[in-house]
Image (tube, rainbow, N blue to C red; front, top):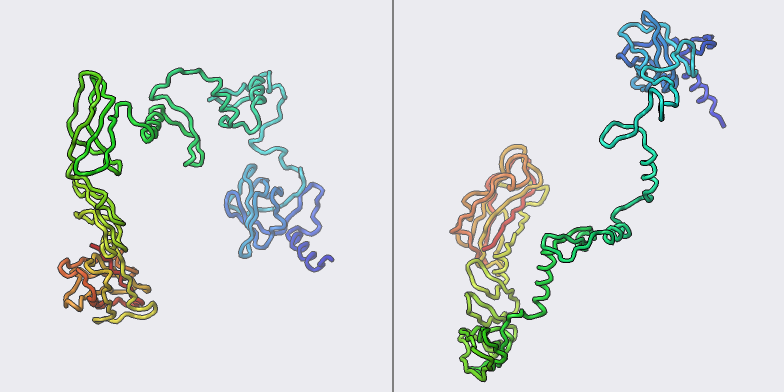
Amino acid sequence: MIDLEQFFSRLDQYVRGFVRGADYNDGWLEVSDTWTYASATSFTVPCDRTEMFTVAAKLRWTQTTLKQDMVASVVYAQGITTVTITGTISTISNAAMDNPGISYAATPQGYPNSLPGMPSAHGSTHISTGSDAIANAVAGGASGLMTGADKTKLDGIETAADVTDAANVGAAIRGATAKTTPVDADTMPLIDSAAGNALKKVTWANIKATLKTYFDTLYALATHSHTSVKSPSTTGVIQFSGMTAGTTRQKTVRDANDTLLELGGSHTPTGTWSWASATVTWPSTLVLASLYDANTILTANSDNTPAALTVAEQRILGRKTGGSIAALSASEILGIIGERIYLMVVANGTTPVVGDGAMRFTVPEALIGLKILKVDIAIYTVSTSGTTYVQIYNQTDSVDVLTTRPVIDAGEYNSYTGTRSVVNTSNNTLATGDILRVDVDAVGTSVKGLDVIIEVGI
């Protein structure tokens, strides 16, 4: 069903700007609205005329002389319609726009058949011959026509051609020139499975190095020494054979764990011979199997000094700065990796109060021997003026822990962007049961909430 009220409202808006009884025989409609200069390519109408000024509608007006153009765009805002013209035929002067008219006809009377800059019609002889012939396109040169040979080349390219697909790559390899002996700088293609199967290259030198590393784990070197095996005891007899004239063999022996022991000395035989037997004394650094209790490993804290180390329960093997390999306790591990203690001194939404003992914290046994390395503070509503800072006081030892307190400046949420703390190294060692007290020394205006972050380590 048609809403007649809406229909006539839109019709009234569309035709309201036209002069009643205007003659349309010449293709033009006279307009009763006042057009007002806005710029060289735009004018305004003091009402909503977006339905009238459709894009590409033709316009005419008089400013000393008759001017014509067409609508490029139209915008209505705050009771004013702004019409922008193309400016290809005429521009608007900063003067009254008399006798305005609009046309929706293809060729209204007096309107130019072509616009400035449009090419005029010309013959088809420019394609191949004639005085205005277009030259063939040249790589790196000006644009032109495609030659027949170029068209043939394009027709010979497969749809969605990919020079890296398997068929093309295979054909390229089969058609390549053969090389009998590769050199180190030669490259070969590979598919990198660790990089999304990307196509990459590798040198022959790197291929050889990779293969050598791999095969060295499977086969002995051609010049390696053959040794007999003897289980450890105070002394032992080892047998050597296969010694050839002109070669040198190192006298070596392996223990029961197949560890190679260098016994020192060498011998260059003068003929084919065999070493029937030799008595050697086992090195003093030999670690006997009898020393290996359950949960024991072999360690060395200096060169050529192997020793058995038993790892107790709840211990982790490691080495502290300047120390030896050891089974470290939980507190020692925390000292290496560091630990942070988070204290919510004042809840979010609550204003901290200046004074000693805002919170107390008892040091647990796991932190014994560790040191306070750094203290930071944080708030949840920033100060509008003034700073916020705290002191950590060891109530058990009656000493301040910090020589420089962490400070939060106005407008900041934490001391990471303010003044960082400096620890008094004479007062920062923790002992089990120490009571640490948080003293609030200053609070900025409007501050809410307070957290203290204590970093401990060795």
